Image (cartoon, rainbow, N blue to C red; front, side, top):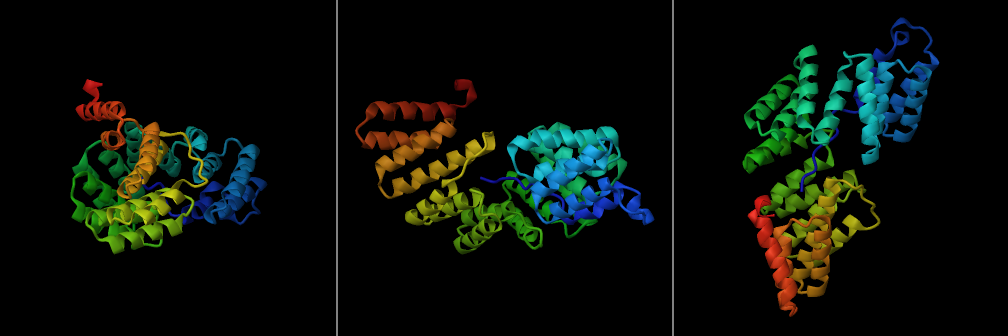
Length: 354
């Protein structure tokens, strides 16, 4: 499973952009208390110190609720908390920033990013087109618009926009990453691998880039390279389950079931996942892979338990139902075997049959 890259602007943008927040920085005047909070918060955010940044930006907003850039930076800090619960707060701050100053380009970019993550692709596209109308040729806007077009199924437009973004900024690795996702949708894996290999040739690499490349290497049975990039993704962010899931899938394909189970155990161990479709799917994937590894070891009871847990998170999985049908049949439980066989057929038949 691929999780889409969500860190589209390089960290240095925040501190560089602080010059736009007030006249003091340009005139040599002593910074106001409000300005000090913004500068301090930006420095914290660039260092990855999210909670202190939130507090500094909140203090700046309290001093001047009409400061559009302060609202934008507070929204950016909320996004950096990586909490599903804070997305609505971030969205509200970006919208407030634009209500106060419709020319604030990066507030529009981040609002579009949120709309894209929420699945409101048309809204994201609208915001990005407004930004490009005001300031044509901004590569981050071009590439994110390309990703919106991909989600809308407009693949030629998507690839053209990524090409424009790279023409404007050849070092922009996110454009390579998004182009790779487009090629994957088009079933052009060679082109996708090429784009992903370019995306990781950068100082600004996200785990998703490594994991997506690892999944394609696994598909091509380039196992050594797949393991290497999976481990690099885990090293970048050990707190995330996706790297361990990909590693478990890689080991399962190679028949190394014990190594797969060890990696999959770490994927879930001690983690509390937000309630969202993405994390429901993630947990269903982990339990499915766990069941598959147990099944390969002929541990039928453990496999049944894992596959049933997978269905708790996503019941519309034909392969999971099919495997359970086979396992229950082997266990001498024809009733349950029949139930799962029928459920698998129903999923394969599609929504009309349900």
